[in-house]
Amino acid sequence: MRGAARIGLLACLAAGQLACTTHILKTPHEQFEGKFIDQVEPEAAHQKLVGGARSKRALDGQPHAESTLDMFGGWGLMQARGLEKELRRIAGKLLVVYPHEKPDVAIFATSKREFNAYATPYNDIFVSLGLLERVETEDEMAFILGHELAHLALGHFQRGDFFALEGKAMTMAAGASTVAMVFANSDLKEVSGGKRELRVTNTAEVKTNVAYAALAYLAVQELSMSVLSPMWQRHQEDEADLLAIDLMARAGYEPRQAMETLEQLEAIEADKQERKAAALKEVRSTYDDLLLAAGLKEGMDGVVKMGTKLALVEGARTLKDVRDYARNPHRLAVQRREDLKSYFIREYRRRGSLDVSAGPADTFHTRIWSGTSGRVLTNHIAAHEALTALGEDRIADAEELGRRSISGPTYHAPFPRFAMYQIRKSQGRLGSAIKNLEIARKGPNVSGAVLLALGEEYLVVRRPKDALRVVREGVSRFGKEDPFLPIAVAAHGMLRDEEAMEAALARCEETENGDLIERCRSRIPEEMKKEPDPVEIFKKLLQAGG
Image (cartoon, rainbow, N blue to C red; front, top):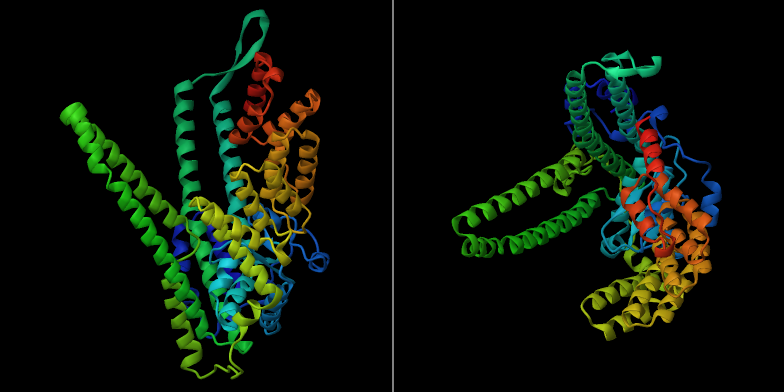
Protein backbone atom coordinates (compact mmCIF):
# COMPACT_ATOMS: atom_id res chain seq x y z
CA MET A 1 0.00 0.00 0.00
CA ARG A 2 1.48 3.34 -0.99
CA GLY A 3 1.71 6.35 1.33
CA ALA A 4 -1.11 8.22 -0.42
CA ALA A 5 -3.38 5.22 -0.01
CA ARG A 6 -2.62 5.12 3.72
CA ILE A 7 -3.45 8.79 4.13
CA GLY A 8 -6.65 8.33 2.13
CA LEU A 9 -7.72 5.45 4.33
CA LEU A 10 -7.10 7.45 7.51
CA ALA A 11 -9.15 10.32 6.10
CA CYS A 12 -11.87 7.85 5.20
CA LEU A 13 -11.92 6.40 8.71
CA ALA A 14 -11.87 9.86 10.28
CA ALA A 15 -14.94 10.77 8.23
CA GLY A 16 -16.71 7.70 9.60
CA GLN A 17 -17.21 5.96 6.25
CA LEU A 18 -17.41 2.30 7.21
CA ALA A 19 -17.42 1.08 3.62
CA CYS A 20 -13.80 2.08 3.29
CA THR A 21 -12.75 -0.53 5.86
CA THR A 22 -13.18 -3.25 3.25
CA HIS A 23 -9.96 -1.89 1.80
CA ILE A 24 -8.01 -3.33 4.70
CA LEU A 25 -9.84 -6.64 4.94
CA LYS A 26 -7.52 -8.02 2.29
CA THR A 27 -3.96 -8.93 3.20
CA PRO A 28 -1.45 -6.35 1.89
CA HIS A 29 0.18 -8.61 -0.72
CA GLU A 30 -3.19 -8.94 -2.50
CA GLN A 31 -3.31 -5.18 -3.03
CA PHE A 32 -0.20 -4.73 -5.18
CA GLU A 33 2.05 -6.42 -7.72
CA GLY A 34 5.71 -7.11 -7.03
CA LYS A 35 7.58 -6.98 -3.76
CA PHE A 36 6.28 -5.02 -0.81
CA ILE A 37 9.60 -3.25 -0.25
CA ASP A 38 9.24 -1.66 -3.69
CA GLN A 39 5.84 -0.21 -2.71
CA VAL A 40 7.22 1.82 0.20
CA GLU A 41 7.59 5.49 -0.67
CA PRO A 42 10.47 7.47 0.90
CA GLU A 43 8.23 10.20 2.34
CA ALA A 44 6.03 7.60 4.05
CA ALA A 45 8.97 5.70 5.50
CA HIS A 46 10.87 5.93 8.77
CA GLN A 47 9.52 6.26 12.27
CA LYS A 48 10.59 9.73 13.36
CA LEU A 49 12.15 9.58 16.79
CA VAL A 50 10.02 11.15 19.49
CA GLY A 51 11.74 13.23 22.15
CA GLY A 52 15.24 13.79 20.83
CA ALA A 53 18.18 12.09 19.17
CA ARG A 54 19.11 8.47 19.67
CA SER A 55 22.92 8.92 19.63
CA LYS A 56 23.31 9.74 23.34
CA ARG A 57 21.06 6.87 24.44
CA ALA A 58 22.87 4.43 22.18
CA LEU A 59 26.18 5.35 23.78
CA ASP A 60 25.02 5.02 27.38
CA GLY A 61 23.47 1.63 26.63
CA GLN A 62 20.08 2.51 28.13
CA PRO A 63 16.60 2.58 26.56
CA HIS A 64 14.74 5.84 26.16
CA ALA A 65 13.17 7.04 29.42
CA GLU A 66 9.64 6.46 28.07
CA SER A 67 10.55 2.98 26.82
CA THR A 68 11.57 2.02 30.36
CA LEU A 69 7.96 2.41 31.47
CA ASP A 70 7.38 -0.89 29.67
CA MET A 71 10.10 -2.37 31.87
CA PHE A 72 8.57 -1.07 35.10
CA GLY A 73 7.57 -4.53 36.30
CA GLY A 74 9.75 -6.96 38.21
CA TRP A 75 11.48 -8.35 35.13
CA GLY A 76 13.95 -5.69 34.08
CA LEU A 77 16.64 -5.89 31.43
CA MET A 78 19.36 -8.50 31.06
CA GLN A 79 22.88 -7.07 30.82
CA ALA A 80 24.47 -9.30 28.16
CA ARG A 81 26.81 -7.30 25.95
CA GLY A 82 27.74 -10.20 23.67
CA LEU A 83 24.08 -10.99 23.02
CA GLU A 84 23.18 -7.36 22.34
CA LYS A 85 26.15 -7.07 19.95
CA GLU A 86 24.94 -10.15 18.07
CA LEU A 87 21.41 -8.77 17.78
CA ARG A 88 22.71 -5.40 16.58
CA ARG A 89 24.81 -7.14 13.93
CA ILE A 90 21.77 -8.93 12.52
CA ALA A 91 19.68 -5.75 12.59
CA GLY A 92 22.51 -3.92 10.84
CA LYS A 93 22.54 -6.44 7.98
CA LEU A 94 18.81 -5.92 7.50
CA LEU A 95 18.97 -2.13 7.63
CA VAL A 96 21.81 -1.95 5.09
CA VAL A 97 19.51 -3.30 2.37
CA TYR A 98 16.58 -1.03 3.26
CA PRO A 99 16.44 1.54 0.44
CA HIS A 100 15.07 4.50 2.41
CA GLU A 101 15.96 6.46 5.54
CA LYS A 102 16.95 4.01 8.24
CA PRO A 103 15.71 4.24 11.84
CA ASP A 104 18.53 4.51 14.38
CA VAL A 105 17.64 1.71 16.78
CA ALA A 106 18.90 0.17 19.99
CA ILE A 107 18.17 -3.44 20.99
CA PHE A 108 17.78 -4.80 24.52
CA ALA A 109 17.05 -8.20 26.07
CA THR A 110 14.37 -8.55 28.77
CA SER A 111 14.11 -11.30 31.37
CA LYS A 112 10.48 -12.20 30.60
CA ARG A 113 10.18 -15.88 29.87
CA GLU A 114 7.64 -15.61 27.10
CA PHE A 115 7.94 -15.71 23.30
CA ASN A 116 7.89 -12.00 22.59
CA ALA A 117 9.65 -9.11 20.89
CA TYR A 118 8.38 -5.58 20.46
CA ALA A 119 9.43 -2.09 19.42
CA THR A 120 8.55 1.23 21.06
CA PRO A 121 7.92 4.65 19.49
CA TYR A 122 11.37 5.67 20.75
CA ASN A 123 13.24 3.31 18.40
CA ASP A 124 14.01 0.75 21.11
CA ILE A 125 13.51 -2.95 20.36
CA PHE A 126 13.10 -5.47 23.20
CA VAL A 127 13.64 -9.22 22.81
CA SER A 128 12.55 -11.58 25.60
CA LEU A 129 14.40 -14.42 27.29
CA GLY A 130 11.60 -16.81 26.34
CA LEU A 131 12.08 -15.97 22.68
CA LEU A 132 15.85 -16.44 22.89
CA GLU A 133 15.27 -19.88 24.40
CA ARG A 134 13.27 -21.01 21.37
CA VAL A 135 15.03 -19.35 18.42
CA GLU A 136 17.54 -21.77 16.90
CA THR A 137 18.92 -20.00 13.82
CA GLU A 138 20.09 -16.56 12.77
CA ASP A 139 17.50 -16.63 9.97
CA GLU A 140 14.68 -16.96 12.50
CA MET A 141 16.08 -14.06 14.54
CA ALA A 142 16.43 -12.03 11.33
CA PHE A 143 12.69 -12.40 10.72
CA ILE A 144 11.83 -11.37 14.28
CA LEU A 145 14.11 -8.32 14.23
CA GLY A 146 13.07 -7.51 10.66
CA HIS A 147 9.43 -7.44 11.75
CA GLU A 148 10.14 -4.97 14.57
CA LEU A 149 12.42 -2.85 12.37
CA ALA A 150 9.64 -2.72 9.79
CA HIS A 151 7.25 -1.18 12.33
CA LEU A 152 9.78 1.62 12.88
CA ALA A 153 10.77 2.03 9.23
CA LEU A 154 7.14 2.26 8.10
CA GLY A 155 6.15 4.78 10.78
CA HIS A 156 3.47 2.54 12.28
CA PHE A 157 3.58 4.26 15.66
CA GLN A 158 2.82 7.61 14.05
CA ARG A 159 -0.22 6.19 12.27
CA GLY A 160 -1.33 4.45 15.44
CA ASP A 161 -1.55 7.85 17.15
CA PHE A 162 -4.53 8.63 14.90
CA PHE A 163 -6.87 6.49 16.98
CA ALA A 164 -5.65 7.97 20.28
CA LEU A 165 -6.23 11.49 18.95
CA GLU A 166 -9.59 10.42 17.56
CA GLY A 167 -10.67 9.21 21.01
CA LYS A 168 -9.72 12.53 22.62
CA ALA A 169 -11.51 14.46 19.88
CA MET A 170 -14.69 12.39 20.34
CA THR A 171 -14.65 12.96 24.10
CA MET A 172 -14.27 16.71 23.63
CA ALA A 173 -17.01 16.79 21.00
CA ALA A 174 -19.39 14.82 23.20
CA GLY A 175 -18.80 17.21 26.11
CA ALA A 176 -19.28 20.28 23.93
CA SER A 177 -22.50 18.95 22.39
CA THR A 178 -23.92 18.19 25.84
CA VAL A 179 -23.17 21.70 27.10
CA ALA A 180 -24.68 23.21 23.94
CA MET A 181 -27.80 21.06 24.37
CA VAL A 182 -28.30 22.24 27.96
CA PHE A 183 -27.90 25.90 27.00
CA ALA A 184 -30.31 25.50 24.08
CA ASN A 185 -32.99 24.32 26.49
CA SER A 186 -32.34 26.95 29.19
CA ASP A 187 -33.54 30.46 29.89
CA LEU A 188 -32.83 33.29 32.35
CA LYS A 189 -35.40 33.37 35.15
CA GLU A 190 -36.16 36.05 37.76
CA VAL A 191 -35.39 34.92 41.32
CA SER A 192 -35.68 36.69 44.69
CA GLY A 193 -33.86 39.98 45.12
CA GLY A 194 -34.06 40.89 41.45
CA LYS A 195 -31.39 38.36 40.53
CA ARG A 196 -31.59 36.21 37.41
CA GLU A 197 -30.46 32.61 37.07
CA LEU A 198 -30.02 30.31 34.08
CA ARG A 199 -32.47 27.43 34.46
CA VAL A 200 -33.32 24.46 32.26
CA THR A 201 -36.78 24.92 30.74
CA ASN A 202 -37.28 21.45 29.27
CA THR A 203 -35.69 18.97 31.65
CA ALA A 204 -37.26 15.87 30.08
CA GLU A 205 -36.02 16.73 26.58
CA VAL A 206 -32.52 17.52 27.84
CA LYS A 207 -32.32 14.20 29.69
CA THR A 208 -33.51 12.29 26.62
CA ASN A 209 -31.12 14.06 24.24
CA VAL A 210 -28.16 13.71 26.60
CA ALA A 211 -28.90 9.99 26.92
CA TYR A 212 -29.04 9.59 23.13
CA ALA A 213 -25.81 11.59 22.74
CA ALA A 214 -24.09 9.42 25.34
CA LEU A 215 -25.20 6.21 23.64
CA ALA A 216 -24.06 7.50 20.24
CA TYR A 217 -20.70 8.51 21.67
CA LEU A 218 -20.18 5.11 23.31
CA ALA A 219 -21.21 3.30 20.12
CA VAL A 220 -18.79 5.27 17.94
CA GLN A 221 -15.99 4.92 20.48
CA GLU A 222 -16.57 1.16 20.76
CA LEU A 223 -16.57 0.86 16.97
CA SER A 224 -13.29 2.75 16.76
CA MET A 225 -11.53 0.89 19.58
CA SER A 226 -12.96 -2.59 19.02
CA VAL A 227 -13.15 -2.76 15.23
CA LEU A 228 -11.35 -0.06 13.28
CA SER A 229 -8.24 0.39 15.43
CA PRO A 230 -7.48 -3.36 15.84
CA MET A 231 -8.23 -3.90 12.14
CA TRP A 232 -5.73 -1.21 11.24
CA GLN A 233 -3.17 -2.62 13.68
CA ARG A 234 -3.56 -6.09 12.19
CA HIS A 235 -2.96 -4.55 8.78
CA GLN A 236 0.25 -3.01 10.11
CA GLU A 237 1.35 -6.40 11.43
CA ASP A 238 0.86 -7.83 7.95
CA GLU A 239 2.95 -5.03 6.45
CA ALA A 240 5.72 -5.68 8.97
CA ASP A 241 5.73 -9.38 8.08
CA LEU A 242 6.04 -8.62 4.36
CA LEU A 243 8.83 -6.08 4.75
CA ALA A 244 10.69 -8.47 7.06
CA ILE A 245 10.57 -11.17 4.37
CA ASP A 246 11.92 -8.76 1.74
CA LEU A 247 14.69 -7.51 4.02
CA MET A 248 15.69 -11.10 4.83
CA ALA A 249 15.92 -12.02 1.15
CA ARG A 250 17.98 -8.93 0.25
CA ALA A 251 20.33 -9.45 3.21
CA GLY A 252 21.02 -13.07 2.22
CA TYR A 253 18.87 -14.77 4.84
CA GLU A 254 16.47 -17.63 4.14
CA PRO A 255 12.90 -16.22 4.12
CA ARG A 256 11.40 -19.70 4.55
CA GLN A 257 12.60 -19.53 8.16
CA ALA A 258 9.90 -16.94 8.81
CA MET A 259 7.38 -19.75 8.49
CA GLU A 260 9.35 -21.81 11.03
CA THR A 261 9.14 -18.94 13.51
CA LEU A 262 5.40 -18.59 13.03
CA GLU A 263 4.98 -22.35 13.48
CA GLN A 264 6.59 -21.99 16.91
CA LEU A 265 4.16 -19.18 17.67
CA GLU A 266 1.30 -21.43 16.51
CA ALA A 267 2.39 -24.10 18.98
CA ILE A 268 2.51 -21.55 21.81
CA GLU A 269 -0.96 -20.24 20.92
CA ALA A 270 -2.31 -23.80 20.77
CA ASP A 271 -0.81 -24.57 24.19
CA LYS A 272 -2.43 -21.45 25.65
CA GLN A 273 -5.79 -22.47 24.22
CA GLU A 274 -5.43 -25.99 25.65
CA ARG A 275 -4.59 -24.65 29.11
CA LYS A 276 -7.48 -22.21 28.92
CA ALA A 277 -9.86 -25.00 27.87
CA ALA A 278 -8.60 -27.21 30.72
CA ALA A 279 -9.14 -24.42 33.25
CA LEU A 280 -12.67 -23.79 31.92
CA LYS A 281 -13.44 -27.49 32.05
CA GLU A 282 -12.36 -27.57 35.69
CA VAL A 283 -14.55 -24.56 36.50
CA ARG A 284 -17.56 -25.99 34.66
CA SER A 285 -17.15 -29.33 36.43
CA THR A 286 -18.33 -27.58 39.58
CA TYR A 287 -21.62 -26.48 37.98
CA ASP A 288 -23.40 -29.78 38.69
CA ASP A 289 -22.38 -29.60 42.36
CA LEU A 290 -23.64 -26.02 42.59
CA LEU A 291 -26.98 -26.94 41.02
CA LEU A 292 -27.35 -29.97 43.30
CA ALA A 293 -26.56 -27.92 46.39
CA ALA A 294 -29.06 -25.24 45.33
CA GLY A 295 -31.73 -27.90 44.73
CA LEU A 296 -31.21 -29.49 48.12
CA LYS A 297 -31.39 -26.10 49.83
CA GLU A 298 -34.22 -24.36 47.95
CA GLY A 299 -35.77 -26.98 45.72
CA MET A 300 -36.61 -26.28 42.08
CA ASP A 301 -36.57 -22.50 42.69
CA GLY A 302 -32.98 -22.78 43.85
CA VAL A 303 -32.02 -24.80 40.76
CA VAL A 304 -33.62 -22.18 38.48
CA LYS A 305 -31.90 -19.30 40.28
CA MET A 306 -28.50 -20.97 40.23
CA GLY A 307 -28.96 -22.02 36.59
CA THR A 308 -29.74 -18.41 35.67
CA LYS A 309 -26.62 -17.18 37.46
CA LEU A 310 -24.42 -19.74 35.73
CA ALA A 311 -25.95 -18.89 32.36
CA LEU A 312 -25.16 -15.22 32.93
CA VAL A 313 -21.58 -16.09 33.88
CA GLU A 314 -21.15 -18.13 30.68
CA GLY A 315 -22.73 -15.38 28.59
CA ALA A 316 -20.42 -12.75 30.06
CA ARG A 317 -17.41 -15.01 29.42
CA THR A 318 -18.48 -15.52 25.80
CA LEU A 319 -18.94 -11.78 25.26
CA LYS A 320 -15.50 -11.14 26.76
CA ASP A 321 -13.94 -13.73 24.42
CA VAL A 322 -15.58 -12.08 21.42
CA ARG A 323 -14.49 -8.62 22.55
CA ASP A 324 -10.92 -9.77 23.22
CA TYR A 325 -10.74 -11.40 19.80
CA ALA A 326 -12.07 -8.27 18.09
CA ARG A 327 -9.61 -6.03 19.93
CA ASN A 328 -6.59 -8.26 19.37
CA PRO A 329 -4.12 -6.31 17.18
CA HIS A 330 -2.54 -9.58 15.96
CA ARG A 331 -4.04 -12.22 13.72
CA LEU A 332 -3.50 -15.86 14.59
CA ALA A 333 -0.04 -17.19 13.73
CA VAL A 334 -1.54 -19.81 11.40
CA GLN A 335 -3.22 -17.05 9.37
CA ARG A 336 -0.02 -15.02 9.19
CA ARG A 337 1.96 -18.08 8.12
CA GLU A 338 -0.45 -18.94 5.31
CA ASP A 339 -0.36 -15.37 3.97
CA LEU A 340 3.43 -15.22 4.09
CA LYS A 341 3.65 -18.58 2.37
CA SER A 342 1.42 -17.29 -0.42
CA TYR A 343 3.52 -14.13 -0.78
CA PHE A 344 6.77 -16.13 -0.74
CA ILE A 345 5.54 -18.44 -3.52
CA ARG A 346 4.41 -15.48 -5.62
CA GLU A 347 7.52 -13.34 -5.27
CA TYR A 348 10.41 -15.70 -4.67
CA ARG A 349 9.93 -19.38 -5.37
CA ARG A 350 8.10 -19.01 -8.70
CA ARG A 351 10.28 -16.20 -10.04
CA GLY A 352 13.52 -17.74 -8.93
CA SER A 353 14.55 -14.36 -7.53
CA LEU A 354 15.77 -15.65 -4.20
CA ASP A 355 19.51 -15.25 -3.75
CA VAL A 356 20.51 -16.83 -0.47
CA SER A 357 24.22 -17.42 -0.13
CA ALA A 358 25.17 -20.84 1.17
CA GLY A 359 27.30 -20.28 4.27
CA PRO A 360 28.62 -22.41 7.11
CA ALA A 361 26.29 -24.18 9.50
CA ASP A 362 24.23 -21.75 11.56
CA THR A 363 25.84 -21.30 14.97
CA PHE A 364 23.64 -18.47 16.25
CA HIS A 365 22.12 -20.43 19.14
CA THR A 366 25.54 -21.67 20.20
CA ARG A 367 27.04 -18.18 20.07
CA ILE A 368 24.46 -16.51 22.27
CA TRP A 369 24.31 -19.37 24.77
CA SER A 370 28.06 -19.55 25.35
CA GLY A 371 30.47 -17.35 27.31
CA THR A 372 29.24 -14.53 29.52
CA SER A 373 26.01 -14.02 27.55
CA GLY A 374 25.13 -17.67 27.97
CA ARG A 375 25.68 -17.48 31.70
CA VAL A 376 23.49 -14.37 31.95
CA LEU A 377 20.71 -16.21 30.14
CA THR A 378 20.97 -19.42 32.17
CA ASN A 379 21.10 -17.48 35.45
CA HIS A 380 17.87 -15.69 34.56
CA ILE A 381 16.26 -19.04 33.75
CA ALA A 382 17.42 -20.24 37.19
CA ALA A 383 15.63 -17.22 38.74
CA HIS A 384 12.40 -18.19 36.99
CA GLU A 385 12.76 -21.78 38.16
CA ALA A 386 13.50 -20.58 41.69
CA LEU A 387 10.18 -18.72 41.82
CA THR A 388 8.39 -21.80 40.46
CA ALA A 389 9.96 -23.90 43.23
CA LEU A 390 8.98 -21.27 45.80
CA GLY A 391 5.38 -21.35 44.56
CA GLU A 392 5.40 -25.14 44.98
CA ASP A 393 6.81 -24.79 48.51
CA ARG A 394 10.12 -26.43 47.56
CA ILE A 395 12.14 -23.98 49.63
CA ALA A 396 15.49 -25.82 49.48
CA ASP A 397 15.33 -26.04 45.67
CA ALA A 398 14.27 -22.40 45.46
CA GLU A 399 17.24 -21.28 47.55
CA GLU A 400 19.73 -23.34 45.51
CA LEU A 401 18.37 -21.96 42.22
CA GLY A 402 18.18 -18.46 43.65
CA ARG A 403 21.83 -18.54 44.73
CA ARG A 404 22.82 -19.75 41.28
CA SER A 405 20.83 -16.96 39.63
CA ILE A 406 22.77 -14.17 41.39
CA SER A 407 26.22 -15.56 40.72
CA GLY A 408 28.85 -14.05 38.42
CA PRO A 409 27.61 -11.60 35.76
CA THR A 410 24.10 -11.35 37.23
CA TYR A 411 25.16 -10.24 40.71
CA HIS A 412 23.27 -6.92 40.36
CA ALA A 413 20.62 -8.13 37.89
CA PRO A 414 17.14 -6.94 38.97
CA PHE A 415 15.11 -10.05 38.25
CA PRO A 416 17.41 -12.63 39.94
CA ARG A 417 17.77 -10.31 42.95
CA PHE A 418 14.00 -9.77 43.06
CA ALA A 419 13.54 -13.56 43.04
CA MET A 420 16.08 -13.95 45.85
CA TYR A 421 14.30 -11.19 47.79
CA GLN A 422 11.04 -13.14 47.61
CA ILE A 423 12.77 -16.32 48.73
CA ARG A 424 14.37 -14.62 51.74
CA LYS A 425 11.11 -12.90 52.66
CA SER A 426 9.26 -16.23 52.58
CA GLN A 427 11.89 -17.52 55.04
CA GLY A 428 11.21 -14.62 57.40
CA ARG A 429 14.67 -13.15 56.80
CA LEU A 430 13.59 -9.56 56.13
CA GLY A 431 17.05 -8.04 56.59
CA SER A 432 18.54 -10.36 53.97
CA ALA A 433 15.53 -9.77 51.70
CA ILE A 434 16.08 -6.00 51.83
CA LYS A 435 19.80 -6.51 51.18
CA ASN A 436 18.98 -8.25 47.89
CA LEU A 437 16.85 -5.31 46.78
CA GLU A 438 19.61 -2.87 47.75
CA ILE A 439 22.13 -4.80 45.63
CA ALA A 440 19.77 -4.73 42.65
CA ARG A 441 19.29 -1.01 43.20
CA LYS A 442 23.02 -0.44 42.62
CA GLY A 443 22.87 -2.09 39.19
CA PRO A 444 22.43 -0.17 35.91
CA ASN A 445 19.04 -1.67 35.01
CA VAL A 446 17.04 -1.67 38.25
CA SER A 447 13.34 -2.23 37.65
CA GLY A 448 10.44 -0.25 39.08
CA ALA A 449 9.22 -3.31 40.98
CA VAL A 450 12.55 -3.52 42.85
CA LEU A 451 12.31 0.13 43.92
CA LEU A 452 8.65 -0.18 44.92
CA ALA A 453 9.37 -3.28 47.01
CA LEU A 454 12.41 -1.61 48.61
CA GLY A 455 10.42 1.50 49.49
CA GLU A 456 7.69 -0.60 51.10
CA GLU A 457 10.20 -2.67 53.09
CA TYR A 458 11.94 0.47 54.34
CA LEU A 459 8.57 1.53 55.75
CA VAL A 460 8.13 -1.86 57.44
CA VAL A 461 11.46 -1.44 59.27
CA ARG A 462 10.59 2.23 59.96
CA ARG A 463 13.17 3.89 57.71
CA PRO A 464 10.94 6.56 56.12
CA LYS A 465 13.81 8.80 55.00
CA ASP A 466 15.30 5.90 53.04
CA ALA A 467 11.86 5.19 51.58
CA LEU A 468 11.65 8.81 50.33
CA ARG A 469 15.09 8.50 48.74
CA VAL A 470 13.80 5.47 46.85
CA VAL A 471 10.74 7.46 45.73
CA ARG A 472 12.95 10.27 44.37
CA GLU A 473 15.16 7.74 42.60
CA GLY A 474 12.17 6.01 41.06
CA VAL A 475 10.73 9.26 39.74
CA SER A 476 14.14 10.25 38.37
CA ARG A 477 14.72 6.90 36.66
CA PHE A 478 11.27 6.36 35.21
CA GLY A 479 9.86 9.88 34.97
CA LYS A 480 6.68 8.59 36.58
CA GLU A 481 5.61 9.54 40.10
CA ASP A 482 2.18 7.87 40.36
CA PRO A 483 3.28 4.35 41.47
CA PHE A 484 5.45 5.82 44.24
CA LEU A 485 2.88 8.22 45.70
CA PRO A 486 1.41 5.78 48.30
CA ILE A 487 4.93 5.23 49.65
CA ALA A 488 5.50 8.99 49.75
CA VAL A 489 2.25 9.55 51.68
CA ALA A 490 3.13 6.83 54.19
CA ALA A 491 6.74 8.02 54.64
CA HIS A 492 5.78 11.65 55.22
CA GLY A 493 3.08 10.50 57.61
CA MET A 494 5.60 8.40 59.53
CA LEU A 495 7.83 11.50 59.79
CA ARG A 496 4.79 13.52 60.95
CA ASP A 497 5.39 15.97 58.10
CA GLU A 498 1.74 16.86 57.55
CA GLU A 499 2.39 19.49 54.89
CA ALA A 500 4.47 17.16 52.72
CA MET A 501 1.99 14.32 53.25
CA GLU A 502 -0.93 16.52 52.16
CA ALA A 503 1.05 17.64 49.08
CA ALA A 504 1.71 14.01 48.09
CA LEU A 505 -1.94 13.16 48.71
CA ALA A 506 -3.03 16.11 46.52
CA ARG A 507 -0.81 14.91 43.66
CA CYS A 508 -2.33 11.48 44.08
CA GLU A 509 -5.86 12.90 43.78
CA GLU A 510 -4.86 14.90 40.70
CA THR A 511 -4.35 11.61 38.85
CA GLU A 512 -8.12 10.91 39.08
CA ASN A 513 -7.22 7.23 39.43
CA GLY A 514 -9.72 5.87 41.93
CA ASP A 515 -7.67 2.84 42.94
CA LEU A 516 -4.49 4.88 43.40
CA ILE A 517 -6.31 7.56 45.40
CA GLU A 518 -7.76 4.90 47.70
CA ARG A 519 -4.31 3.37 48.23
CA CYS A 520 -2.85 6.80 49.03
CA ARG A 521 -5.60 7.58 51.54
CA SER A 522 -5.17 4.20 53.20
CA ARG A 523 -1.53 5.06 53.95
CA ILE A 524 -2.40 8.08 56.11
CA PRO A 525 -1.63 7.30 59.79
CA GLU A 526 -4.82 6.99 61.84
CA GLU A 527 -3.88 9.85 64.15
CA MET A 528 -3.37 12.18 61.15
CA LYS A 529 -6.64 11.40 59.37
CA LYS A 530 -9.14 14.25 59.15
CA GLU A 531 -12.89 14.32 58.84
CA PRO A 532 -13.87 15.26 55.27
CA ASP A 533 -14.69 18.97 54.91
CA PRO A 534 -18.17 19.33 53.28
CA VAL A 535 -17.23 22.74 51.86
CA GLU A 536 -14.11 21.36 50.18
CA ILE A 537 -16.09 18.42 48.80
CA PHE A 538 -18.68 20.84 47.37
CA LYS A 539 -15.94 22.98 45.80
CA LYS A 540 -14.42 19.93 44.12
CA LEU A 541 -17.82 18.91 42.77
CA LEU A 542 -18.31 22.39 41.34
CA GLN A 543 -14.85 22.30 39.75
CA ALA A 544 -15.56 18.87 38.26
CA GLY A 545 -18.88 20.09 36.89
CA GLY A 546 -17.25 23.21 35.42
